[in-house]
Amino acid sequence: MLRVFRIQRFNPEREPNQWVDEYTLEVNEDDKILDILLKIRDEVDTTLGFRASCAHGVCGSDGMMIDGLNRLACQTFVGDIPGRKPINIAPLKGVPVEKDLIVDMDPLLDKVKSVNPWVVAKEHKAGERELLMSQEDFEKIEDMTKCIWCSCCTTSCPSLWSDSDYLGPQALVMAARFILDTRNEDAEKIIEKVGGLDGVFRCHTIGNCTDACPRDIDVTGAIAAVKKVLLQGIDNEDKFSNIVWEKGDEKEQQG
Ligand code: SF4
Ligand code: SF4
Ligand code: FES
Image 1: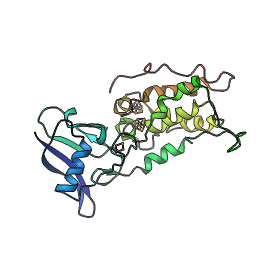
Image 2: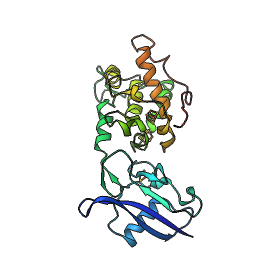
Image 3: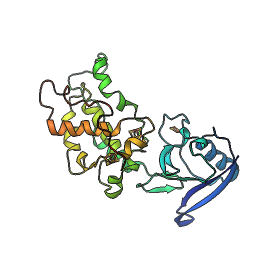
Image 4: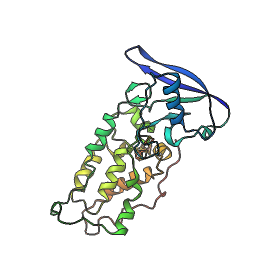
């Protein structure tokens, strides 16, 4: 069948404003959008710019807006957008576009780095032994360990669109993951960061982030867990036992 692809383009060396190019191709329902982009770039228009690497939903590099929703091009099929209408493809929203579908990820990744997304184990000597955690403790953070840093959540967040200083859901998922990691002795640093002016209370629980996540992470649930830590504190012996949320508990209505 023939489908029309309307792709938002931008090339500051050629023209200061974005424009839309239309391509009509013979496609199948089970063709991935990434396959279509590769076909256009290889056979129709070699100037088309986009990022992709693994093609299997693992590297997180091909997040883009497809038919109005943030998705990974390699995990979205032509058949996911039924009917004969043109399929609109645009870069992620709320971040500077560098070229065509390529956005500047640095501001988003800087926000993630700013929450110290790693384990600090002060007494543990590198190479001494593995730093183990119990299966039960791992299950509390397992959902968040699936994050591939694609930024589909953060760039679908209206709070971030209106305030670019807001940390955003991607950084908050990482904050939750490393606050709740029972091996981390520096969780207080993360808590201090996410409790600041641009932190977790800028979230208005609209829920776009959870709907946008290609890994089905309960993003709003993770954010709710961070809020609970801030409201209840972690300075008690049993610090994590009363703050872990039931997955899906806090899922908000779509705004
Ligand atoms: S719940 Fe809404 S406001 Fe909060 S991070 Fe997600 S999209 Fe943004
Ligand atoms: S939480 Fe989901 S949408 Fe957000 S960066 Fe991680 S994988 Fe991507
Ligand atoms: S190309 Fe790696 S996630 Fe799509």
